[in-house]
Length: 396
Image (cartoon, rainbow, N blue to C red; front, side, top):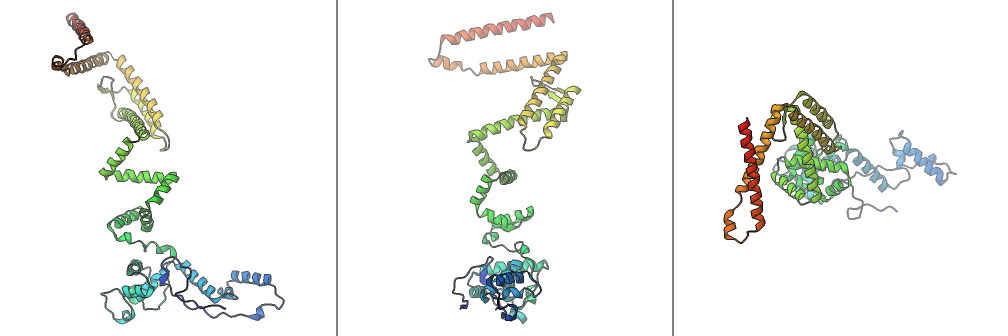
């Protein structure tokens, strides 16, 4: 015997707020004995049932034959939900709820407040209002009728289920400042806010996806880089994390070296100038500039997945070799280059000697004979250098 369904009984719960669902009673089922031969077997009956399910000639009513009315009602309810999703529940709210403060006039007189409706449904007023707001936004888009024209119990044509999630959010976090920011960012990216909010509420799931899937990791990398442009605190945290990890620190150093070398080659191409080993900046010969352009074009054609370090090293070495040759082949430039190198070395030596604190030698017992020997050798080298410079001055 089939027992009647009561709210206190345990029953499967449909997705999307099942407490709003009030299924209508199923139509009476008709059993036509003349359609079943006297000698029909169970297999024949099963085949007939399958055939009835495939037959649309009677609006699917043949599928009801021989089934428990409760099962048929569940199937019909499921069909409505499969086609409309949350709209089926939102309609019940839209035609029955009149939020507090609105006048109870005309058709709205029979409607109740969201709080009263929630009490009848056994859920929270916030949940009711989320359905109410979803319907309101859809009404603004002319997708469903406005509340004012709906009366309790009225049925209207509902949108497809796929559209529902574009208007409804099941998360209370969406109303917070953080949730609003996530919603705005999701809309800017052209995705449903509910997806972004779900990820934000479950960072462990996001971590698992990043660890397991290269595509997700790449998306996360790009997002972090974009965020770091406007978040100095995140920049500092990322830099600190990299500095504390030896492998990452080496990788950053390697990439920085490659970037510097590519920048050296690019500067020659874009500015038409070269920087000599001694630090001079001069016009680049046409041959050198053409070679730099060739190497740079090869680097620019690399895919993001290809390592640029080797290509950068090859381009840098080739260009540096041409720079050295250009300096040697130009007598004036060669003399200037050597003069600059000498001045650079002299300045470094002078700075180092000036940093020696002779007072400490007198005050502390740090003297060793080797120190005096080194200074005497340095004095002799300086004397030789001075003599050579004086001789060169006299001859010139």
